[in-house]
Length: 205
Image (cartoon, rainbow, N blue to C red; front, side, top):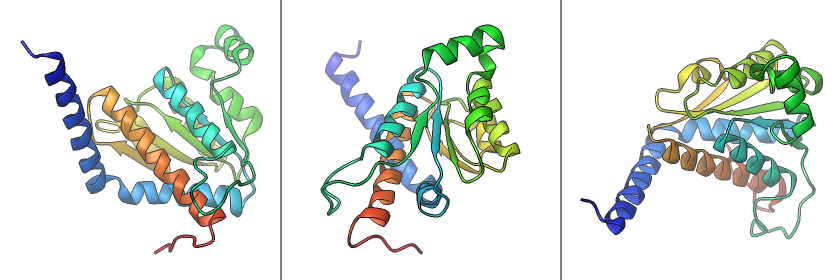
């Protein structure tokens, strides 16, 4: 029988292996996602909308708070102005009204239908890539010409096929996929802050 310590080591080693695979498979997609965030704020004056279910709902809110507040204060600036971002997972009255009156598969698309416009950016999270309410919202965004980032795992699911920028974490375990999503977004947000707010910036090749 495996000991608790062995289990911890196993989990950490699997997490490390996932990050190594991300270096091989996700660098270009993460770069594209970061530059899409830069364009949304700098070129279009748009808003970022995020959403997902369960743990991915929490990750969506995490993304929003770091865009609206800030990721870090060590990028050669002490403070930066807030950037418009909104998690579609937080308004209980809206979520339950849509779920009750129309259907749970519409809880995100209905909000995008009311709020999102061309020049905005959608960041959709689904570890399987097959969450029906997430897919419906991405399709709604696509129909309006709104750029989409789809964050999934495994084989990417349907989300990887319909998102403009698919970021598919090369793992099957949900925990490692979610850890990969968090790492990918931290990098994207860090790049955005470096480009828009630090004195040195970053070179875009």
